[in-house]
Image (cartoon, rainbow, N blue to C red; front, side, top):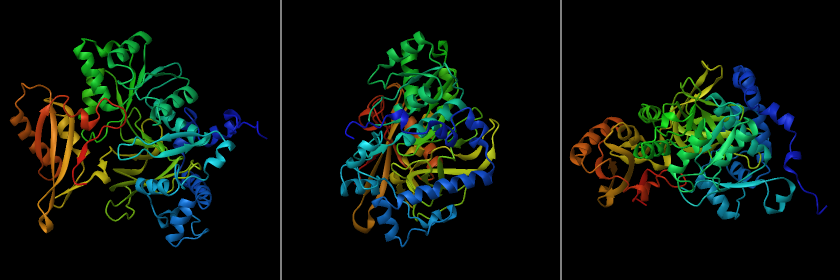
Length: 471
């Protein structure tokens, strides 16, 4: 009928949903501590259901057929490596071939009336933002994933949590507010970024309303601390219990320690993606990020060959969503470099595989004299030097012509003040970066605030660390 409306709260059996994807604290008593055999059986059941659905999606049917697969060839979870992986470039091609949403979705505009849908996009830091549809299960399962993280980090019903991402086409802020509002009984304060609500005003809100937790990037936590210091605002007067953040390649923990010292509160690292949701999160033990294994099957593959690697190996992260049907994501190579470890029981009570610190982006790799260098790996040396602002960008370029052409990289780093000796700072950073990267790079010292145009520090979206002049 023309007036049939797919009401959101009648679109899903919510009791069944909670049993399938338990929010906290149920998660800690159930799926968060399953035996290895029970977890594998659950993952296999969900994986095979997603594979069956994906055969009806043109994107997967085409790619799998070209790889020599037929329906029925994938009958166990251990067969997953037979399936070819794909990446964001393949999704862009799918969108270009079947605009505007691509043929990786199970339906186009003709099916939009059948169920409640939300359209979100990637951040667009590496090209045109990719549009992705979310049905209620995909949307709320992401909320549950993040609610698990907040709970493991100390959030409890009644807490007020300040969100410094903006509710926009990117779904990070929406994800956080859904987690807090729908699945934790917390009060989200959707301030948005410093562009939407000034940092000074953000601090006023936090003090006036007794904010208990923050959802923000590591870089912006540092920015807030700088503004607080400049205005003689003591961050420790706030009622902050936890800082839910994304620290990037903070390999030795320098960024985390400096932020915790400034705020007087624990900082928790997390890892998530636009399409898959919050994949992994720190708990109060801070001994590696727990993976929500009932919602995602994780692998690492060799950056150059794409071959699967054993647990404990550093490689490119490949994710298979176990809850997403609209659209499915099966063997999605996110090209984020990290390490996945064996399942273990944690002091917090959860028993999961864990994820290492984020180590870099495979698609931003620069090959210097035979060594693979990831621009984000420069963060460790730069953030631990108090003479820098912590902001930097790597400039990759070619030198020479023909067979003699080679790649080079210069790291531009902001110093805190013109009074700091730039030559001495540059020389010290060259040595520190050589130690971390395994190859020598040049360092150029620039003034505070001068890199914002390129890094997007303080703006919407991810901070950029590579200016690629090779393209």
